[in-house]
Structure formats: C-alpha cells, structure tokens
Length: 548
Image 1 (cartoon, rainbow, N blue to C red):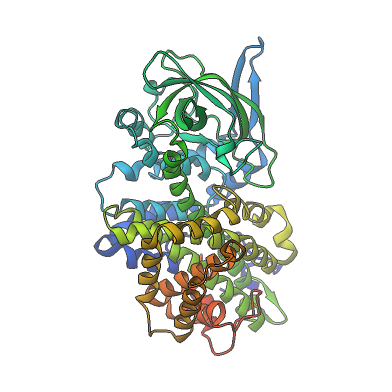
Image 2: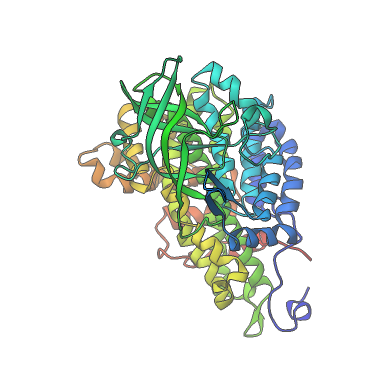
C-alpha cells in the first residue's frame, strides 16, 4: 500500500498486528538449521508468542510497565517490616505471558531433545515485547543447573520453578503454583571480585543450614521466591539457597534497603538488600560457592546474548517499518539508496547476533557432546562480550532512522536505547568476559579446538573469513601481554564465529555483506557504509515486517 494513501500526514503507523517470529527470516533460518527434524515443531510453538508479541495490546503493556515503575513498601501502616514491591498490572500481565509460554525453567524438565533451543527462540521472540520482565524469567531458568549440585534441593525447587503458572506474592513455596528465582552475588566493596564478599554464613545445629548476615549491592526482582546467595562460610565463599518466605509462613531475614534508580530496565525492580540472620541452605561444598553459582551465571549469560539480539531485532523492525511508511524527496525512505545501506547494515548485525545466539542455545540440548559443551563454554564468553557490546551502537542507529520521532518516548525507541547497554554490564562486563576468554584459552584447550572446528567447517567457502581466522590463529600463537589484547582477541574470535555461522546457515546475501564488511575490512566502522556490489535492497525487503 502507498504510505501516502495510508497516512496522509506522511507519518508512519504503529508497528502492531503482525507475527514477530514469522517476520524474522534470520530467526526462522536458525531454527531450521539447528532444530533438525524438530524445526517445524519449534516454528509452530513460536506462532502464538509471535502474534501476541506483535499485538497492540502488548505494545501498550510495554509502555505502561515502564511508565509506572515498581514501588517499594518497607513497612505496613503499623510499622512492621514487610519489604514488598508493588508492580503495575502491566508487569503482571507480561510476566503471566512469559511464564505461560514456558520461558522459565520448563526446558529442564522437558523430554524434547530441542527444549532449550525452542525456549531460546521463544525467549528471543517474546523479549521484543518488553525487556525488563525478562530478567526474573532468565534467573528462574538459569538457577536450575546450579540447584542440581544437590539432589534434595533440586527436588524441592525445580518443579515449582518449571511451572507455567505465574503466582505472584510472598507465601510459603509449598502453597504456590509457580515459583521464581533470583540471585545475590555482588557487594558494594567488590563488584565482580566475589572473593572479597563480606556477607557471613554461620552454621546452625541443623544439617546444611546457615544464618546469613550482610548486604548485596544488586539483587534484581526481590519479590521472587528463592535466591542463590554467596556468603563467607567457615571454609570460604559458599553458595546458599535462601527462600523469601520460610515454611512456617514467616518472612526470612531479607530486608530491601532501596530500589535502584536505573538508566533503563525500569519496569524491573533491582534492589539493594540486607540479610539479617537470613536462613539459607548450603548448595555444594563450603568454599566452592563461586564454582557452584557459575552454572547459573553461564545460563544467564546465554540469555544476555539472546536478550541483546532480541533488542537488536526489535530496533531493526521499528526502523525498517518506519522507513517503508515514510516518504521524503519523492520516494519512501526505504527506497532511498543511503537508507537502504543503513537498513541493510542493521539487518546484517541483527542477523549475525540472532544466528549465533540460537547456535549456542542449541548446544545446551547436547550436554553429553564434548564439542558442543566446549563451544558453549567459549562461545558464551565471546558473544556475551561482542553481541551485548554491539547492541547500543546498533540501536542508536536504528533510532536515528526514525528521525525526531525516534527521540520521542511514544515511539518506544528511547526505551530500547536505554535498555541496550544493560546486558553488556550484567553477568560480567566486557573486561570480565574478555578475560574469561583468555582463561578458557589458557586452561581449557578443548575450548579453542571447538572454536577452530566450528569456524573451520566453512573453510574455503569465503576467502575473507578464511583470512580472518588465520589472523586470529596467528595472534593466538603469541599470548605475551595477552590481557592488554584481551578485547581485540575476543572481538575477532566472536566475529569469525558469527561469520562462519552465517556462511553455513544464513541468508547468502547477509553472509556476503557480513564477510565483506566485518571480516574483509571494507567498512568504515559506522552503519550504512557497506561496500558496493551487495544485494542490499533484497536484505532490506526480507527483514522488513509487513502488516498490510
């Protein structure tokens, strides 16, 4: 339809009334590539998620949940501590849908051989509805691998965490039809250096029970039902399972000091808490807490990649749709050569992030495959660094495609922009992840072998990719002063992995543009500078949502 006929004022219409999943060719290609014989089932499962995510109702809840931020109530009217957070109804609506779609711990109890891939595709799709509520959904998913360090605790908690029922409120876990999880690791004096934690854990006379006292600088979603918390036990930093409400119905000794006033993610309550003889059950051995909780951190890093890729795709959809429905200088923006280059470049970035995110998620479904687990180990650190760090840059360019309209809150682009730096900070900032890559390279040679195998599967198919891989291997041959080069090494390895996956599984036009720009050096470093001779118009057409 002619945009000038549809909108006489030459304003675009809202991007609503479409299937978010069906409109995303990169997502569908990744599902087909990594889902095997189950790809059709995964596609079918995405339909209700995609339709709801693209609805006008969901778009309204996206705005309302962020315009009406959570409110902390430390005490009731009689002065008794209650430490409760009040959320707007839109938050509860979003949570009901996300939990109902099985995006929390459901895959861990599923018999499907592609349960985690299916969940990742759903998480990516539903994440485009609103980003803040995906935090408690992520933590509830991620807690399960850590809980499995203790069979009794796993049996106690996993069934409730895997429920598809959202049951808000502080009550004994046994009385609830669905549970949510969180974690408390960092403290004000240490941040990422968890060895400096000062929260103490004092053993009681009950086996594996401790009383925790101290503070936690960031604890998101403090109304969740259970938390993994790090504290100093007699033999060192240890991981504990800390319920919000005790079996007798009394509140555990967890007090909310304040809610953080954040740049973005404002629909979600991130808090500073104090523990006052809070009852916790030891998870794993004393002194092994960081190793225990790192299983949860690995899973949350997976969702950081998925979440950032989801934000990228949402930004691309908004930008390309606006350009298709806005005219300037006698033609739609989407038909202008300069804009075609920008939109195609954004699509290349988004497609690469989507493909690598789904590839790593597929590895979770193969826990007994050494290659898959080694690739997951190094791939999470690589792409957590790269995808999450690329997101703000990409979203800023997408916002600019809307001009002044993109700077107005009603467009939703400011919400996306404020959200875009978050995943690069949570679960380890850029330096933490880059150093984690060096750690894997130095201590786990199977990780490098997995990367070489994965990128080597396309050897000979693109000379620019081959040359980039050789450059990386040359650099890895001499790791003198490696920390100084940690970010460079990580970035190049991450981009090579993306390139290999696109060459092997992606849209050929996107793969060609990616290798020419990100690997071949024919790129000026800002979006919209793709070289000549590429199918840019085709890329834009295939990535623009259509609601006509």
